[in-house]
Length: 632
Image 1: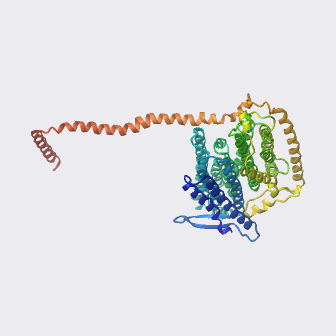
Image 2: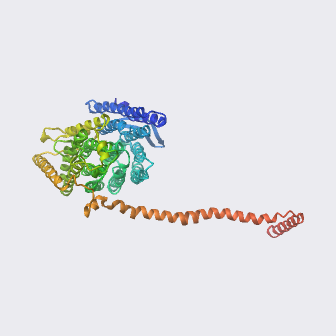
Image 3: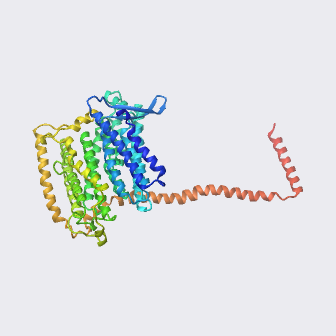
């Protein structure tokens, strides 16, 4: 089955071509069916590849060469796919979650006139992400990397008639281009110094010690690649595009935040773990930036009124957790949190979409409340998602967060205490969101209340499936203390992804302490939220420091003042003095000069034969004089 890996990205590409070329003529329902079936077919093939990789007979990684992509002199870069444990795991996440989001979209986008075009973009998005994770070299990864950037622009600005949405799409595109430049420089450094972009060749040189032994070079390459990850995975300071990405349809938000785009940076660093192990400075920068982003996202999420913005900043915080795990060398743990996060974050976003659908498009939580009775399936599944992301014992989020905290504790105690504080903040803002949306009495209008109803099956069935995965997803890495086994560690070992193994009574004691702290903490948080956030009287107004958090620490305003406005002012000045007065002045001046000269020369054409004979004789005299004085 692994030899047919090309079918995995091929099916979404075919779906994109069919829907993209025929979107004006195709019925909306047919477009949704074609788009969904394309991802389902990819998921089935991915499932077969996963079980083959998992089998004892698989000798990986398997490189499937499609054709020679670039061949110039000694440089050969094939268009090739790499099948191993890491890529097969990401294939399941992308196609599995992607299929559920496609099914969800058939109902959520059913009344939109551009539904077929939407599914074409969605298929192209999945195709680009599959290309990114399957590439056997950095160039193929970069093609997929740019593809998801393009698709995010198209989907975030899908409702392009709204100027704010198109501005959000442009912001995401520009911020990602900044990160992509760093990635491109890192690729060029690898190519210039090691003569290859292939993972096997490059990492093989690093393993064998035949590559340059300069630690400085390793750190520079790793840091440049990390700049790319900062853009795609929305880390400080390139994080501001992610909350604005909420402008797109809610299923798009789920796809970007859970299964595809934002996990690209995590995948790239996990794939490049051999390089990062040789670049301790860059690896520490990864940890610090991840921890800072986790803290920033958690504090801002505390006082947001837009239901999708709360989840967006939650994603920001969880991505920080993933990078923190990678930064302390726990690569398997970071990938594990990618998987569990895909389950509960897709669940939360799709649950938010169900709420928005029931509210007639309303996203402000100050107009919600009391939805528990009206939306019972949405409420129960959303509650499970909240429990998972908050780290409630034995949910998938608890197991992956527990592993991250243990790895961080072993690496740096200060990092651990900050990360634990962020974990508590996560529980607080998620329970706050749950209560303000589903508890108390309804705070919206009478028309909104009359419109409330549970979503159709195409929306609720994906919610139920994701809720189950959010509950049981942690079993693949459940600690030995609870009778589990590190299946994921063993599986990813086939892709040479190192894992941090915790052994001994001290670790067991820490795990018990963390478990007890989690239970007590959640109990305290539940009681505190009942008292601190008066649900029925909630008005969504903040003062003092709460207002600073509600306004996202004024980081967007800072960027506007320090970067956007100066560049805009310089652009206006360049337009006025350089473009119009300078370049246009020169071009127009040449034209005016020629015209002025032509007007003067035209006066010589008087039509008098005597004047013409006089000019001819004068010319002969001038030529005779020149020949007399110049020719010896």
